[in-house]
Every structure is written in structure tokens, then in C-alpha cells.
Length: 586
Ligand code: XIL
Image (cartoon, rainbow, N blue to C red):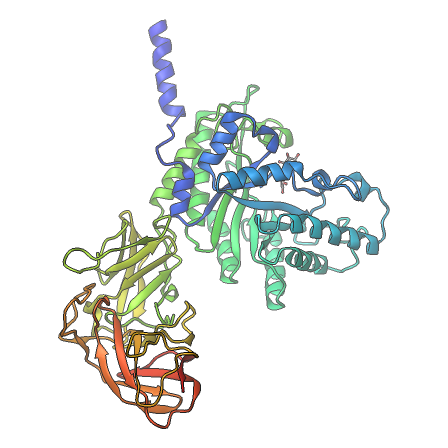
């Protein structure tokens, strides 16, 4: 009997309780460039396993109730900031981001608002003051607000609420939401402002209405930055393809998408337990939502509504259901936890051709041999910036920090890598090709391929800031920066730095930092123009200490150049550098 009990125990331990690996989920989501959040309640922070799990596994928290109108603004001139403050300070202490929830909602309103018989004018003032006080207090601490929650009915019509039309704040249709967004933006100009709702994950009447409103708001400059998908699912979540189409159309507008209140409720017995089969189905749903988010660079956060089955709104709101979260009531990870891990570790990074740009001009129409490029937005990579070093022979590595960038299967030298931003030098082997297949790889997981045009040359001048415009990174012959106080004069030689020079003579070696002259010269003809006047180019090619991919161009100022801040451009072969770069002339 004892023996039997022991083996059942072991079997169930293996089946039910995957161990927490050395890498908590928040480390994995850091590598995916997304935030992993949980709704939290300050009253549980004194419970050690609650606080420990929250801080260890999550990079974001959101007050489950503490920032709602009723709890935070219980009397006309009474604010109860304490509980929300406790969560904000916990988040700060554990380097977590805070989402604010929510400013305009029909639920959890205090009775002084609902029973006040206020006029529209008075309600408008009440809502304005409320948004101003709450968003204003947490400015700089809350990075994103669910400004509006659940304002549409499932059939896509506007929900009638005290704020919209009963009696409302006096603005018809979606105008009251526009007003709330503008007020929130005034109170905290840095915060990302979201519209948040449920049952609007797939394409349906409600998500159509939200999409239409978002399009309208964006076309008129209303401060809306994202759409929150609550994602309160059962184990039959409906069509993933339809959710994907909806995320695609929203992110195509340039808006962020965040999964804000994810949970997957299951039927439970009287002790709150779900079946193993249901837990496995639930794990798959969690996996699918994470994998879906990782397909979109603009899907920026996933948050579960709580994190332990010990504290979840589900049993109260959906009697007979529970077990909806990724940790069980004893804070042990459930199969859902393991499947989230695996989605984060195995979903391919996603890249787009338009996100591969010149590191100097940010042109994204083509790449040229040896060009220094930056790939933005890849959805998997080192969590923090890693700068590569040349090896003993002066070469930049082509595999760095588990990252590779391949051009027709040739790995490019990597200068730095961080999730969402990788700099590399286009291999010279693309020379002569019309286009090249670019793939990105992190920890051996390969992205989708994208096809990028190859130009023989694509000059981009380096500028002083990362805009690709404005004052060029131009030196005088003594290597001092050209500036208003150090302008160049007629006959002076200035040194410009560019990328996209194309092939060189003799051929450059990929990733090599030249240490001794002679340096390879740009093969194509190079000309320069300052203030509308053609100027002689004395030298164009490699330079001491510059990685192949960056070239130096020495230009002598022609006599007739006008004074002041003058536009400067270079032409390499048939291609001209970006406009908007300047040099100071005296
Ligand atoms: C729920 C909380 O989880 C409960 O504790 C509270 O009693 C009611 O509200 N959609 C939302 C959340 O936007 O604010 C709700 O939170 C769940 C549904």
C-alpha cells in the first residue's frame, strides 16, 4: 500500500508539476522584447510566496482593482492612493513596469458618482478631474493606461453608460472617449494610452467597431497608442487565425497590441481542481496566445489576470470554473507555465524587410556590399545590449551573443545585438546580386526570410545624433568636430564618414578592422557637393580603426562655397547620400 501510494505520488509529481527552471519567465520575455505582466493586489504582498513569485516571474504588474474609480476615488474629494502606491513601489523595487487600469469604465464606480444625479456638465468636470488627479499622480510611473475599458457592446454598438449617454459627459458617439484620451494625454504626456475590451480578440462586430474608432482617432491625431485584448478565455478560445487577422489590422495602423487580462478558465470540482486533460488543453491555449503575440513586433506585452489560482476572479465571476492561471494555489507552476516557457524559447523571431536600414541614413530600400546596417524589431534576441569586440586578428565575429544575421546564408559581422536592434555589416558576397535573402537567428532559432534589394552602392553619411539628419559627423584635418564654433574654411580638408560604399579595391575582408595602410579604396567614383558647389574628393576608403563597412571620405572645400550651415552630400557611383545633412562653413 505504501509503495503504491509513493508511485502514484511520483507519477502525479511528474505529470502535474513541472519544475521552475533556472530561467524565470521574465528572463525569457526580456529576450523577446515584451513585458510579462500580472494583475496584482497589494493586500497579498505580505504573503512571501505571492511577492516572491510576482517579482521573480513578471516584469510588469497592474493593479487588479486599486486604480479603479471606486477604490481610488471613494468620495468627491477623497482619494485613496495608498493601495495603488504600494503596488507602484513594489514594482519600482523589483524593476517592473506598471500598467494603469482603468480611468473610464462603467463598473466599480463609487456611489457618490452613480447616485449623484449629476448633469452632463458636472459629470464632465468629475471625469476630467479624476483623470487629471489619477493619471497625473502616476505620471512617469505608469507607462501605459487602459484609459477606456469595455465601451462597446458585443454587437458593435456603443455601450450606454454614465459617461457615454446616461446621461454622459455631453459628447456624442465616440467623442467622449476621444475627450478622455486627450485629458489623459494632458495629465501624462509620456504614457501610452490604450482602449481595452473583452470578446474583441477575433474579428467580429465589436472588434470592427474598435478598429473603426482607432482608424478615425489616428487620422485626427487623437492620442491613442494601443488596443488591449482582455483575453478571458475558456479552453475553447475560438479561431486563432481570426485573432491573428485582428492583431494584424490593428498593428498595421501602427498601434500596439497587448494581451491585458489573459486567463483560461476550466470547469473545476468542489475542491477547485480541474482535470489533467483540461489542464493540458489550457496549456495549449496559453502557448498559442504567446506564440501569436511573438509574431508581431507591435505586440508588446502579455499579462495574466492574477498569476496564482489561489487568487483569481474566475470562481466568483464564473461559478463552477477556476484553475485559470499559470500557477496553482500552492504557487507551483502548472502545465500552462511550461508551455509558456516553450513558446518563448521556440517561437521563431519575426523580421521585416522594411526594418533593415542603413545605420547612417536609415534608408531601407536596399543594402549594398559592406554597408553597416541595423535590423530593428526582431522579436527574439539578447535581453540587454551586447557590444562585440574584434578578435586577436582584428575581425568582428559573425556569431555574437547567440545572434546571427545571414545574407544568402553568409553570416554578417555583428557589431552589437539586443532584442529589437542588431547592427551588422552586409557581407561583400552580395555584390552583383539583384537582391539577397536575409534571415536572423537567435539561439539557433531562425526567423522568416525576407528579400532585400541589393544596390551597388548606397551612401549614408553618419550624423551627430541617431536621426540620420542634421549636422554630419564631420572632422577637420586635426580630427576635431566640425561645428558652428569650428567651421571649415575654403581650401580646408574635412573628413566625412559614410557607409554603403559598395565594393572596394583590393577587396575588403568582411568584418575586418584595418590596422595598417594601405586601406582598401572605394571602387566606384566618389564625388561631393557642399552648399550646391562640387568639391574635390581627395580620398575615399578604409581608415585606421574603422571596421570594413564604414568608409572615410576626405573632401576639400571649393572656393565659392557659401558661408554658414550648408547641406552636404556625397555620390558614390550613381547613388547620392541622404538629404538633410549639414556642415558648417566660414
Ligand atoms: C475584476 C477583478 O478581477 C475583480 O477582483 C473585481 O471584483 C471585478 O473586476 N475585466 C476587467 C477587469 O477589465 O477590471 C475585471 O477585474 C475583470 C474583467
